[in-house]
Length: 190
Length: 253
Image 1 (cartoon, rainbow over the protein chains, first blue to last red):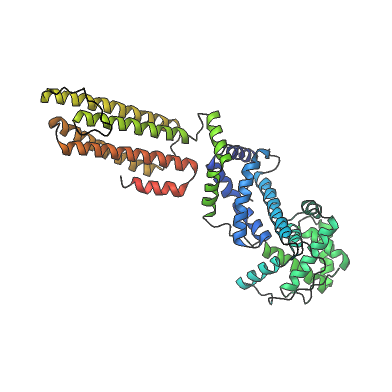
Image 2: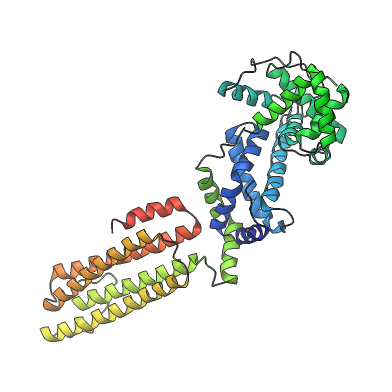
């Protein structure tokens, strides 16, 4: 996340609030890469991530009056972005609730799709494997292992119990190991 | 530490909250447990790999699309308009520039009309009644009348430009000095053409060539000033692509 001073963040937010497009571009240049990466990981596809990025910044304009400088502008935007991604996942899951699972409730073990090697092919496999996780399970796992949220925060963000967050993260790790050919089964261990 | 404790320690380690003592206990356990070692190594590797996903950022066109949506957003437009109203001295002088540009066009259009009347060319509809030059005027009277019309037009014109320059001097020009130098160079060339045309008209007030040359020079100056104002607007609004397109047009005079 870019390092900006508190005063600079507050000034920039005020300019954005006043409909200053140049200020908005500055905010975009500072924070879009990180927000895009979060959206990319959560949603799994570049086009979805780019659409999400647009929505996050439009939402940021609507909500920027609520930015009081208690946290950095980057953190504020990041939280906004994570919530927007979760909303997108939830609404997608609601639309497909007959076909897909939100959490991993002892799904069948996955079949490995790669030998676990490196390089471009591995990245494609990795993205495919993450997308194969049930949305809620994927969100809990990414928020914890990649974004660094604690289980109690994830529980609050996803509206689940803290224990559920722990088990979903654990299941996601095991399932990914299986999908990426690093573990022969997707079963739990501990 | 036992195998069943590793998951909790791993969780804490991955989010950076594992204390030093627990970290040492974890390492000690991993040194003697291949299964846990593989589990932790995989989780760390997965974290590192996943953190690289998406770091290339959005496509370069993503900002263009977002800025277009923002500019079209009524709430964004309202916020911008309110900010200008609340602080007329704000650096973002978009509406002032637009208003000034419009005023300049009107003044110059009026000046051209006056010149056309004075020079006796066919007026732009609706045809005004020209009473300034009597029908029985001598060539000397005509020259004097044209001179006064030219002076009047020039005065309006110079007032408008002075106003433009005054506003420009109130803020830091957002235009690159090299581009501004090109603008000034082109303005000087056009001013020279205006002076030459005026001189030719004084010598021969009926000269079609001199009249056309004068009007052409005025039109060029209007276009160049409008482009300069548009460029300033785009720079201030943060539209580098549009600003570049305008700037490349400026070089063509």
